Amino acid sequence: MISMVLFALAGILVGGVIQLVKANATRFSIGLTAVLALLATAGGFAWWPSGEA
Image 1: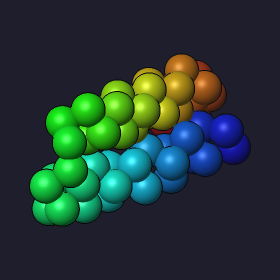
Image 2 (image 1 turned 180 degrees about the horizontal axis):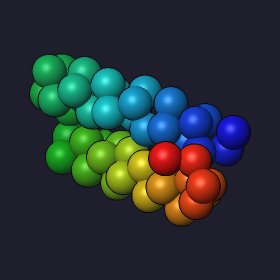
Image 3 (image 1 turned 30 degrees about the vertical axis):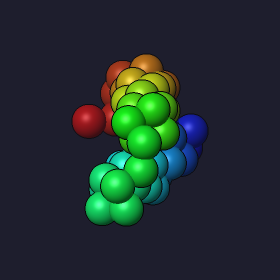
């Protein structure tokens, strides 16, 4: 359950990165959002149940 929530959060953050790039936001805000998306994805894989694939 937690892994699904983290993957959903990662998807929202990736969409945010795309919107920030389109809006010509600062590199810091784009980078910070991208790092958070990567951390959410890594957390999703970390909490992935080993028997569920």
